[in-house]
Length: 319
Ligand code: ADP
Ligand code: MG
Image 1: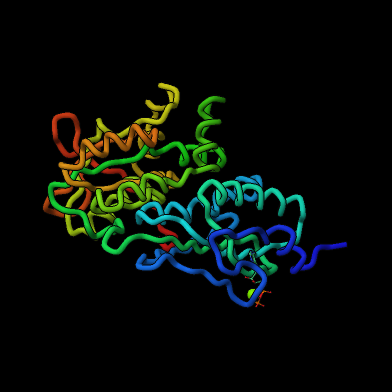
Image 2: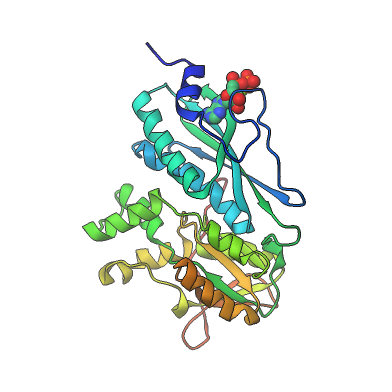
């Protein structure tokens, strides 16, 4: 018998919600925010053919749909608490649904975040998630809070996810080990929630790298009304073959590819020692990649401190 909407919700998306007053099943969910905390709220939609390939495995899709949303909470320094899921499906395929739910809840459980409600409709495959988190007043990592003289930091290497996209479009051939690493970075991004929360109150501004390193750091700089000055030689390199790292496609992906979900943040020079400790305790290769200074835009400096030409970068749905 085909699965109806209510059995589908019951079977795949109704689970214990320990951090919630009332979860899935009523007209609304009820949540009890921690007194005196601010709510951080963000939504992201993933559309088949635009944000993911039609042949992506459903488990990776479940994981990634939540990961890209949690990454926004991480970039705000918020603790993830709740999310809602609006699912538009061409049909109720149980193999697909159980894989999707497995990936989604694996990540939800890893971060203690409750699915509290949503909506389920029929149509072209689209996943829309809203996440809610909490952050102490004055501690959120806003894009506009960078200060001149801040160091710019990056939580990990960029570029590999964009190389996986190019491979799937048939524009690039990758050796097996490179292919495996790039696919993992594209399909199973790890939102940097622990880092974001540790930086709240320590760093000034932060952003997650979803649209490309230069584009997103450019957004932070613009909102802070400053110039980002990046030292090219200090940009972290992913663990890929020397062959691949030497290709122009890698350089373009590192600077302009999307889907990395690392955090870029600005912090005062006085925070360097504390950030180094954080890198150790969280096991993240936090790298100092530049500074914020008076001016505007993003400048990429070579080893002699000379500005280099920038590739055209940054993804924009309407350009
Ligand atoms: P209503 O008609 O009141 O909008 P729905 O029939 O859409 O209610 O949903 C019934 C319940 O199931 C609600 O609590 C809603 O939040 C929840 N729900 C619907 N779809 C999903 C989903 N994809 N994931 C989680 N909860 C869902
Ligand atoms: Mg509804």
